[in-house]
Image 1 (tube, rainbow, N blue to C red):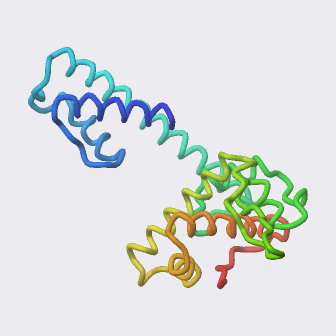
Image 2: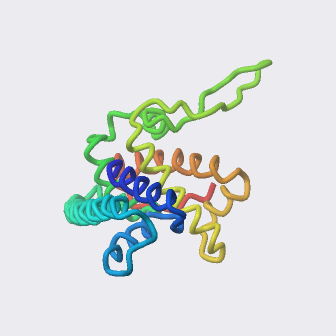
Length: 211
């Protein structure tokens, strides 16, 4: 994924150098890569267009490899009961479910759901001042990969709720109404980690939180 991001950035940079700006998103760059060479050459030096062609070819190859591996991961995830259970949670796909099951293993190693959230670095730090406890920023310790996947998943869930509020579940809508968007997605990831712990330790199916 990082390699693909770098190639996309290089393609954008070459195009921008000669005054060609693509819409945001990897799909726009991938669409350009598929069409490169099939239309009239862009207004740029031949050597620059040649380098651009190499980058486009590399991007298409990476896309094909990522798609193939994603399908394999999805097939493997459906074979595992715990992964199937986790994929029923909105914002959790095959890659995230597989990573959680493979990394955590036996969720009973964590005493509570909060312990799992803390291990992932999603639990806010406790700060005391004047006899009162306040929650600070998340610790960002623990497993960075799973934390990132959970936050990305909850960000997708929140964006869908924000763009189509009529289809948003009550819990997501409540989180977005009470917190700034970025804080809401992290809080949702924290809550999701605790739900995941309950689902894995108690073999429970997903139940939408109400608070």
